[in-house]
Length: 292
Image (cartoon, rainbow, N blue to C red; front, side, top):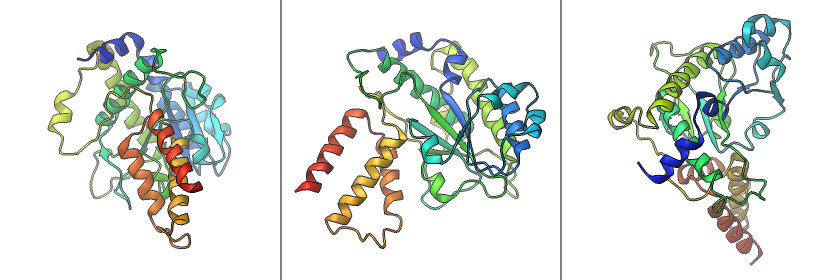
């Protein structure tokens, strides 16, 4: 185990320390009752941060009745107008998806997702504790990691555009003839895997599930031990837009027929897993090329 891993274990000690870095984001829900049921599922598994993006109906009494002991989550829930605003300060984004879509991201199981999340939290927490590596004057660097898990609409899940914001897609093993779960059930299942992993992770100092990762047939790209904090989603989308604009300006792309170019650039950024210094370097390069 590296020195970074040892120091990160000292920084994040409890299950709640990990779970507080995670937020559930429900997109464009139809039924307020499902928001309540999701809040109950979250509370049962120790998650406390809920964001609802542009719900068709507001949180109401049916939400509260279905939330049971998780009603406090509804009181503190954030209502966001757009998905972009909801994930702007997130450094890592997962999306629950029952099937592969156009421009797929790496697909992971709930357990693999939990390992990626907690390894990321350990690394980022160690960086935040090191004053020599973190520029605390920068608004882009948050005090603790912020990870989002996206859940889609009851009838059709997340759109291709929304799935494109995610670094990883989480798929739950289910009956292949009908692998679609109710949104609150999906929250419950994924949250339960995360909570179970958290219990063991805090006891074994990040040694859980090495065999699972090595035995899996899924090729998962894990972020390495960078020396700078990761960029957030807002920065990734800004870089994607600036690169697209530059390509149009230089005649490398047609503004009327971009097709999947922005999605491909966004996926490339996710795969590279840029840090703050790399983001600054690329931003400076694009700015220079745009002026010349």
